[in-house]
Length: 262
Length: 331
Image 1 (tube, rainbow over the protein chains, first blue to last red):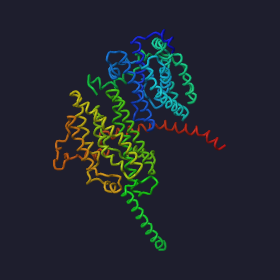
Image 2 (cartoon, rainbow over the protein chains, first blue to last red; image 1 turned 180 degrees about the vertical axis):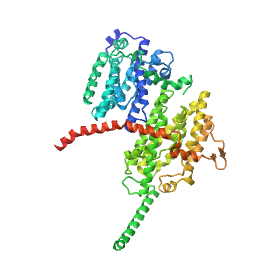
Image 3 (tube, each protein chain N blue to C red; image 1 turned 45 degrees about the vertical axis):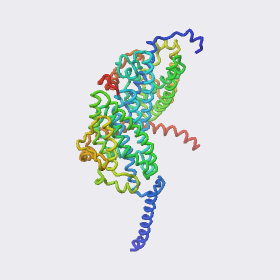
Image 4 (cartoon, helix red, strand yellow; image 1 turned 90 degrees about the horizontal axis):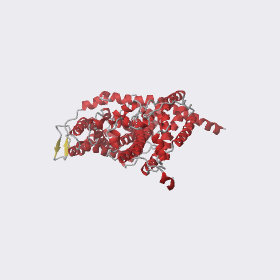
């Protein structure tokens, strides 16, 4: 990103930056909230603690990103106002993140697909021309590397474990694969942020995600499901039915006691 | 006849040897030496420790459930993050404690099986429900506060691995206690509804917290021997009194009323004197008749059962991926 190219690079509007940061923030928040549901219920104590760690990392990322979004917006909304007082259509997470935990296989597959995307995205965002975003990405990328190691390791164990585990994880993959298109298909905002040097080039993310996932599936002895195209638009606020329930639970206290400090 | 004639001197010698070993063991304890896993120890000492450490480990694991109940509903992202970290710490405490118990010749699997079958005990406090956000504050303040009173002396327990595990656990518990009190402080400085929520939580958690110290000394079966072995250093009643003396002024600072109409300050003894504890409730909860006994055990069993195929897959994977290595080693 040379000085010459920066001088001709277009500048995004505050609205565009706000929307873009919310996509990252809400994806981390919603995925973290999903994993938080599991604490105390994991298949072993070690896995319980690992899932809790990932939840904590994701919520930590969400807090930094929401605070940044609030500053960009400039209307005085802090991380909690953004997390607890927006309704589902204002959430900008990818639809994959809000899918229910299901059994451990479904949780793991959801995380694996998402971890690979977050890892590649944050890796690129460390070079973002938005300094604040780049700083957050530097922290997040380290966490995402660990998340990927955990989820791809478990994908291999489940895929190449017993007949039952192979069947369960294959079914989970088949069910969740339809949400991957949204991760990899850029819309106008993704394209614009790439042109502005803030977001990664979408083609690069797709290529790296595909490579990473192909290797993980091969190691896990799992078939890549057939392409299932449905244009999910979580990034633009059109969600699955699951998000409303997740938010109803998450937001209940601040909404029941408006204006209270906790 | 012959056998008897032959056995008697041998048995007598064995008895003398045993007495001698017991005496030397007690001398080590009296000198405040730590007993380590490979040292000789009386079987009753070993069994007492296994029972106590396992009970403590199970309490940490079951204790993740009532607080876990509020993680998804924590009222701010900071509170959510702190609560996740706290519940995770409890899981971690469970892990070190199971490891400490394993040094006494019992496996984590056996201990978990005892918990799930309902044979092992865990702290009765976790059989109470968490009904509002204020309960998370009350648990940190009162339950972790009471746990610290019980556990600080265990850092000097005669059994090395347990004492060392407790040093780390107590550091984390004191952080938990502070975050609980801070939740209560925020609520008590908040709206009328928040203050009412805090008072309601104190009303429900006060007596069960006092019962956490166990039956009064007159009715405690394990106290005397455990004190001699320095597994325990203070009696149940001494620790309970210490907790009351520390906690009542904290409640006053919060502007909350301790739900005990008989509570009074005894100027000459320099102690608070509480009203009578309803031990019938304690025994009912201990017997499995508390508000959440059934739910807590069912949640643990469900996690174990639904996780079975995952553990089997991990074992099968490990087995498969060791085979090429074994074949190479054999070749």
